[in-house]
Length: 178
Image 1: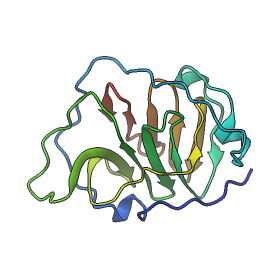
Image 2: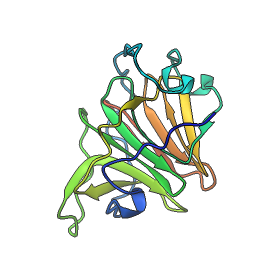
Image 3: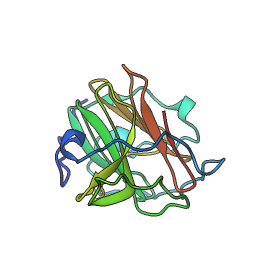
Image 4: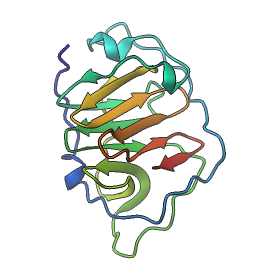
């Protein structure tokens, strides 16, 4: 299945200004449920972007291969950009605090997380955003570009480098870097 190449306001995560962060740690114990979304019948996305919701990551369908994609969670709270060089997601509303910004970050901090080739996931220091994608990645579905996969579930958005095992989950109530 082909997915139209969707572009973000920025280039891939390599050009996002990602910088190393403090060691990974979640600030809350439980993931929060994102509100259910109603997809418009006028959405002309492939069926993977408009399939029915799933409650948890283990029940996800196999990922659909893409070269790149800019998408949002069904709630619209999380926006992501995925391509063969990495994955980045930004969040609008959150009930947690990021670690302190590094001294060399003069841009926005704590609203995005990215993972790229052979590196651990980190918070992004960026002057741009990947929010605003037009397509919704329905709960229970996932996309894959090269070694990177992003999966949408009611509890969190999860992106990872399947080759290195590094990645992140992002939700209103918690983030997790691994």
